[in-house]
Length: 62
Length: 315
Image (cartoon, rainbow over all chains, first blue to last red; front, side, top):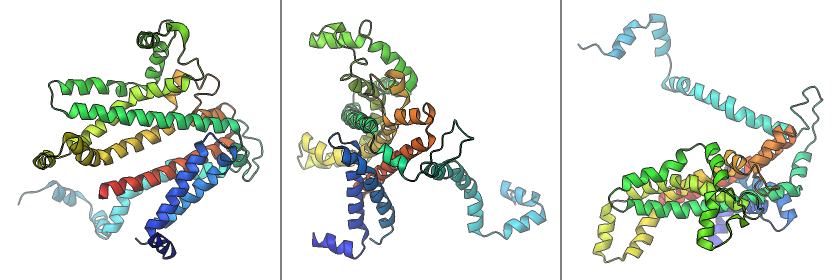
């Protein structure tokens, strides 16, 4: 776990890609879930942040 | 000395042109070859994408070209993301996407595994199984509407035969509970062969020597399946899921022909809804924002999926 946070602090690609992937997956789930409307409302911003983050962090060093 | 085509072409080239070409670096020549493709990509993909993003912030309507176009900021996004009808459409798409992928992977992999066993006539069976995916989606949608007819369709008779239910007691495409499953069944019927073919390619790429080594180590068939067959076919399976996932996210023709999005809005998938907004209600700016939301969703999903695929391939 500490390795993960160290990777985040040292701007390493692996942990940041993981964070971006989780955001994208969460955004897509929020978009398509049948439970609460507010989650649908905020789904796009979560997916967008995750996707843009993924594009940026995929250029970080390994 | 034998004169080759290249030397003949070199001789035929005028000195001025030859000098100009000789003056180009390898990098410049590479750019000359790549430039038409890049130009087409910019013109056909990138420019429309940027234009769509721009339109998504306006109230532009393509059927009113003389009306002033106003910049309305994020209002289109706000309206879409608080619209309960679009929320229902997303849920219908999620239902369709999840169950089609589930059944196609399950049946496709099973069929591929069976076809991969050595038996007489497996080539013939492969040909028969892949027939549905060779048909046009419009044709498939049309003839399944007949198969689903409660009075004359064979589907109800088959279900009635196995369950004992009354033949005319249910209508697959007229019932709000059954219609979402009707489109899942047809898509599964049509596209399982595609998943099967990709899985078959994966299974046939596994060398026999690995199984022979496993036999020497006295590994059971069950263990061989889970520790050799599945991991080695997994990248192919994931590729099939990626292709089918993206295709089904934008599914249009088959469902329009089969149910037209009905009954009510139960089978209205996002692409059908998007087409209605853009070309029936002519709300171009609104439809552009809708398209941008779908694009970001598919792009994000595809990004993490490709990352997962690369990880599996590295193993």
